[in-house]
Image: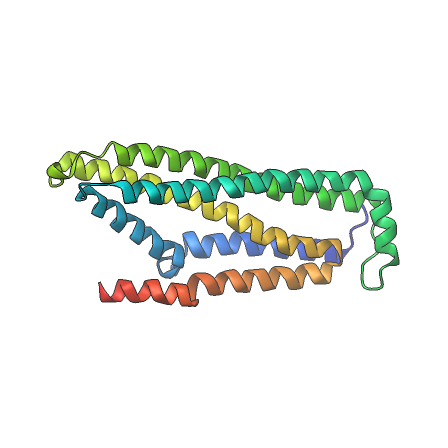
Length: 231
């Protein structure tokens, strides 16, 4: 099949299963409440609820600027990565010859190389859409925070409702940002496929392990979790 062997199919299936399985574990699974993302969502809620009682909300504007600027950076990087990936299609014949001479690389065909490159471009395109949408949602969140009534009306139901809207928007924006960043991490694993399906399998397992540790057993997760227990 276009220069792909059984091990290639196993590797790409493991890659897809790892990506989907990680998403379910972090966002939906029974242990998702212990993930770093969920812990930070609780801090997002605390931050915006605290902003309701602040007379001067300059600090909240600065936080939103930081979130927007970081998202814009990754969105721009995604576009550059897409362009770089598609550029590889122009040198397919030369690359195939180079890989044929490498001692540890698997012999590939032009068709297989082009399919791999297109797959990489699709991953970066997915990341761009996620970052682009997250950037827009953070813009919406900034508007919603600006629409929260003044601190003198902090206890009114409409003020709490306005804060809840901003909280939900911020959490959804963070969700899409995290998915875009996740695509970047898995793209690193995908690069292993250009060398060998064995390296693809190993790289996918390594990236999955690193991301799982960061979400559940990292120092940062422990630090935020300690704050939850002491609250």
